[in-house]
Length: 186
Image (cartoon, rainbow, N blue to C red):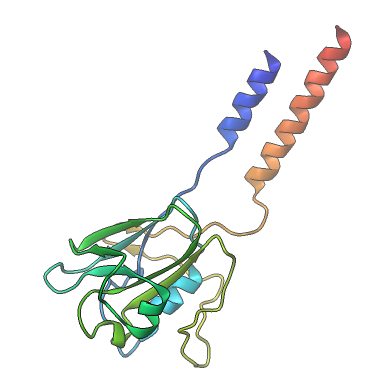
């Protein structure tokens, strides 16, 4: 009885966090501006993506598309034979496995203008191959999340030990102590 109660408490405490990220945050999926030519490189460095998250690409469907490509096609801006082709203007890519994923526009010439995205899922922090040299190409850890017309953009959870995990562990220890106490009485 107590064990099942304890397991129920632990299950209630354990939450699944999956986020839907709008690629580019305030910038829709499109050719980067001259003021922010590395928008997608910076964006991917700032977001810690995990399995279960999804990427939302927003763009005018009559003017653009999104394709998933191989690493080689990404480097060469080769848009022939994509892995995945999305063109509805509201394209959602669900992350279902660890690894590196490469995206670019399906429109000729857009990739050469840096409309491309490289993400890494579940492999720790990596240096991206397409980082442009500059004074500071990475965003600060405290970079804000801005509201958009589509709602708030979620901030990725911190990598430090969460208070929720600590409290779950404490509940587990207390539960075992209570079970041991009642078992010693019988």
